[in-house]
Amino acid sequence: MKESSIRICFSCAAVRFLFVVCISVSMLPKQAESQTVAGRSPWKCHIIDGTSRGADGVKLADVNRDGLMDVTTGWEETGLTRVYLNPGPGKVKAKWPFVTTGETRSVEDAVFVDLDEDGFVDVVSCCQGNTQSVFVQWAPKNKDEYLQESKWRSEVIPISKGMTRWMFCIPMQVDQKSGVDLIAGSKAPNAQIGWFEAPKDARNLKAYRWHTISPAGWIMSLRSVDMDHDGDRDILASDRKGKMRGCRWLENPGVGESQKKNWPNHFIGCRDKEVMFLTLADIDEDGLQDVLVAANAGKAGQIIILRRLDIQGRLWKEYVIPFPEQSGTAKAVVVGDMNADAKMDVVFSCENARSPKSGLMWLARKKGVFDGKWQAHDISGPKGIKYDRMELLDVDGDGDLDVLACEERENRKGLGLFWYENPHVGKDH
Image: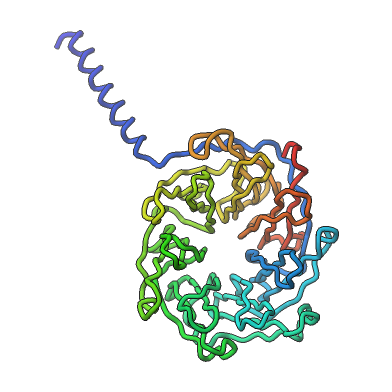
């Protein structure tokens, strides 16, 4: 073969190779670039309670109707659940008043709910480990006794005992009968999503009935939301392990016996990832609620934006924001405007964040949500190893969003349940 022919053949092969590469790359999920951390200036940390071990997520509600959000969390290693009353902007930088609502060994989740609808907010705790039970901690019927431990009464829902390792619970009126029902999810053995049907007398825990609506692997998040805009509440979930892993929603079949059977399941993304806690936010401000989830692909932490493309919740597109190298692995994500620039930012927490890595950061976008770079900013610094579920709240009343969070591994070093104070707007975060 002549030299000119060889050059032509080689050129053709090169073109074909480049064409295949371009097509392959275009089919991958879109990646949003994440830069290195802009400085390492941790926010000021204020301890709410550092007296116990294994704080496992924060949930909010205004339990005493004073206009301030209060907090509940389960302390997994210590085996108890507590409620913290927000003392107001002038006192939030000191320890908050609290009450232990009950002993809950291996507690994984605690949530506020006025289960008996008497006007006094109770707490429901989910326990895994060998406990494998769901507890109701009944609040005292006198607001002046709310912080008196002896006035709280803790009881197990009998049908929950020994069924599975309970991981997460949310209140939801499912059947439009009696009082509020409880949606719950678990992990193996016997992992499932379902609901506890409340009887006419909500205090009669023996009368609660359990209905499985989906198999599961390891439930991390549950949200009650009308995903298909048909007027009833569906269930949005992140499932960490097994055949059902990924982000998905369960379609409410409507009032009747069908609610007590499996609900239609709709996957929206992340089938190939270990998904952790998720959140809902219209991050691109197009009028449709998107889903963001903290996820791990191997040992690489990511924020996955599942962009909703239709009002019925059937069409979604996945975008990936990789974690910066200075962070741990993925645990939770929340969304809010952290620097008052009228753009939605992303806050994420991490596990495996041993020093010098950070366990809590926030991301600001420089361009569009889906086509621009995201700049990482430190919040926690190297302190802390295993952060958990967070909430954004203007704790000190200065007009910006602070971060309420907890840490499960460094309680002896003064962490536990705490909040990070957002620096004044206008400063370099």
